Image (cartoon, rainbow, N blue to C red; front, side, top):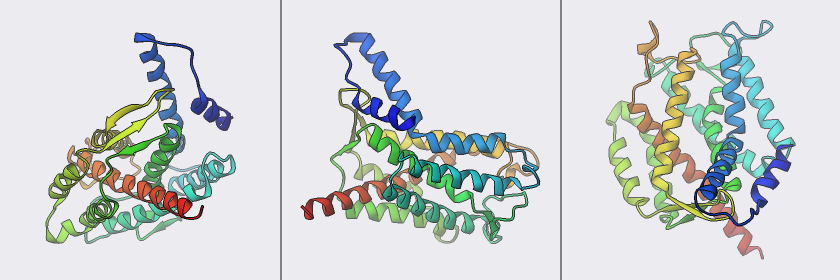
Length: 280
C-alpha cells in the first residue's frame, strides 16, 4: 500500500492552483512526504513507547526492540520501500552508531547507560541501539527520494568527508584532548554557507539553506531523546535519581551528527552517480 502512496506522492500533478490554496496544499504534501520518510523512525519509536519495561512474554524490553527494528528493516526491503543499496547504507549507520555507543557507555567514559537487562547487550549496549542512528540515515535516504532532493553548491566532497570524519572523531577524542565541536561547527558553517537543498513538495521546486535543515533535524532528534530517556530506555548520569530534560547542548551534538549522516548519504549517491555515468 505504501508503494502505491509513494507513486501518487511523486507523480502528483495538480490542477492550476494559486495563492493561499497552493501554499496549503504544498504544505500538506510536504507533511505527508515527511511522515512517509519517517516510517522506520515512527515504527521504531512507537515500539519504544508501547513496550513495557518488564518486556513481553518474558523477553526483555531491549531484545523486543531489536526484533522490532530488524523486522521493520526487513519489511522495508521486502515491500521495496527501501532498496538493497539503501539497506547497505543503513547498516553502515548502524555500525558507526553502535561503535560510538560502546565507547560512550564504557565504564571509563559513562556518558549514559542502559539500566535494564537484555540478552542482546554487548559491552553494556543493547544491539538495538545502533538502529537509533540508522533511523536518522533511513529518514534522510527516504526523504531524498520522496522529495526529489537536489543539492546546489555542494562543497567539494573531500572537504565534506574530512569535516564529517573529524566530527565523528571528536565524539571520541573530546574526552581526552578537549571538545572542538564549535570549531568544527564553524568549519561546517563556512563549508555549507552557500549550499541550498532543492526539494519538491508537489510540482514545483522549493529551496532551503541546507544548514537550516541540519539544525531542524537535530532539534527533533533532541526532542525524541528526551522522550526516550523519560521512558527509561537509556539514562544520563543526572537522570538516574529522577528524570530531567536532556541538556540543550545535545542539540548541537545531534545537529553535527546529522551533518555526518547527510555527508555519508550524499557521498554514496555521488559515487553511485559517477559510476553510473562512467558505465554508460
